[in-house]
Amino acid sequence: MASSSPAILPVSSNSNPGTTQEPQPPIATPAFKAFFNHIVGTVRSGLSECRPWSELVDRTTISKPESISDATTRIRKNYAYFRVNYFTIVGVVITISLFTNPFSLITLLCLLAAWIFLYLFRPSDPPMVILGRTFSERETLGLLIVLSIIVVFLTSVGSILISATLVGMGIVFVHGAFRAPEDLFLDEQEPPTTFLSLLGGAASNAAASAAPVIVPAST
Image (cartoon, rainbow, N blue to C red; front, side):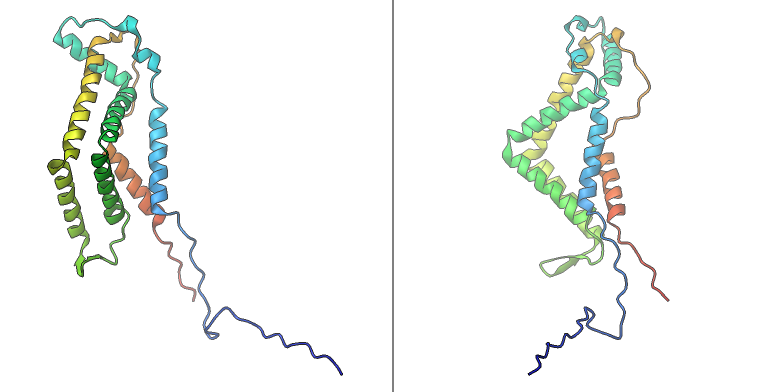
């Protein structure tokens, strides 16, 4: 009795044999990852211009200014030289203030997440729907602005940020006024990167990297 081998049927991955599958576009880098990488790169680039902290705390350069105009000149020159260090000091003061107030820290992080995921990286199509109501991009922006005003001015977040910023700026002004800048060699530097320009540049780069790739249809 001859043994019969089972018939092997060809299996097709295409459910519609009469149609051909179009090539799929490559998967783009996630927008949030590009946003995060841009921020990390910008922070590293800024910190690379940080002056040695030993120069900042050199006691031999501390002296009382002769007048208000002398103090103003010292602050301007010291800021031009220790700009990154001063921003770091203010940032550390704000960070410590937020970590000592967990509620304000969580509230601020939630507000930042709302801006990132509901406006910066969210596509305008389809529109956002909340409780059965459709919100356009302009309405979403308005809601986020109102929410930011409420969080900053009607909670403890605003007072903590303002107080910490004033304390940090006070430390910077006192140091700049009492440090004699005669030993500093000032050079031309680029204008400082602000937080808004950082977010704007990061969001635009992330949006560009997350844009879908359009493949022309084959004729």
